[in-house]
Image (cartoon, rainbow, N blue to C red; front, side, top):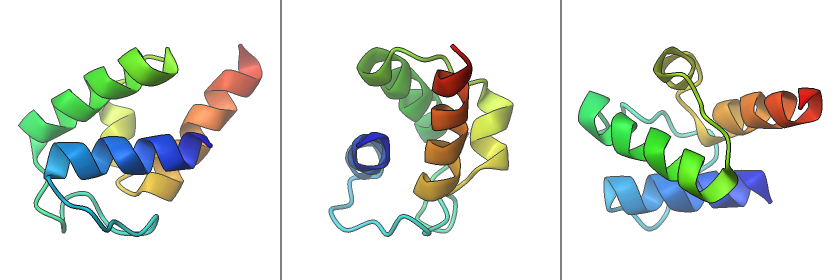
Length: 75
């Protein structure tokens, strides 16, 4: 469920309809300004703040989803 939501957030931010969970954000045309929008959308939709450096460390939907799930498990 989290992975699907993040995939949707990325698709909207990047203006792409078909994103694989293993596609690299930057290879898809992402950059820091779009990443800031993604960061805000994740906070708004999932209620969790992701530090910008973690978004850069996990540049795939699968990677950032795993990070979000680990943060939620600790909460």
